[in-house]
Length: 332
Image (cartoon, rainbow, N blue to C red; front, side):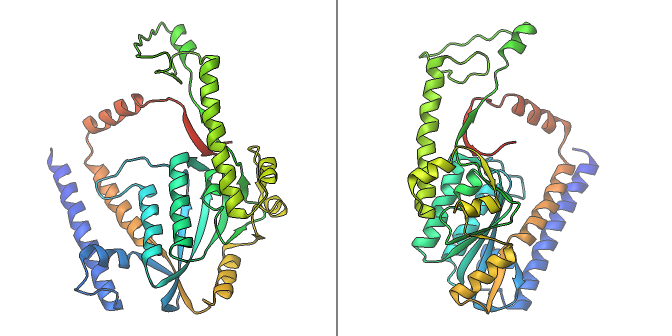
């Protein structure tokens, strides 16, 4: 490793300790830090951004779900997987006695079936077991898995132009067999059974295999319908009528009772404050400072990634399986 890269590493380490020191000093001056607490607890507390000043014993937590819902399983040297961090935020809001309610801001086209179900499970636990109401404020898009996680909310707000709905399941794969044949590429596959390579991108799918995938989609679709029926208190036949995969504007969703009110985040917050008697509560969100710190250090990390590392990443991505995956995802 050359001198330039060693200097980059040293700079990254220095930035880390300076940033942590600054956060701890800030927390101490604000009264948030106690030397009886662990370093991890102190840092977690300092990584909160106040939106509205108010009572620290009765707080409203704002959680933001942005982008595709997926567990990438990839963590940088200084930053974690956003999906796992979001789950941690739900747990923190649930177990923090000072948090009285939650507003979930959703701007997502959905994503993985398993990931969406896990977020939904934790939100239901927050609402039922911890008895904390939560409202949803939909942004530009809250479709498919984005709607799935919102369904159990006490109230759902959406902008008139929000894209929501897309209730359904999709399994989609890539078939490059014709491309391979044109370029003289052959695939030798040995399996223990005729369906072991189901969904393979190297050949056409058989009718029997298509039936297997369809049965999986139907089962997951039934689960999605039940989530909406239970969360919205709607008749199953009505939900199935609406859940043909189509998208709705916020106004259309209100007309079909998929949401409660057309309005902004501020409208949702005001409603929650008045309904739950939390007019004087502090309103805060997790992670703004933490995201900044992680991004800063991730940039430093990239400075000393060599060509060899980049080559390994390229090879890994090329070798990634393109087999079909079930998704609660709206993709236009």
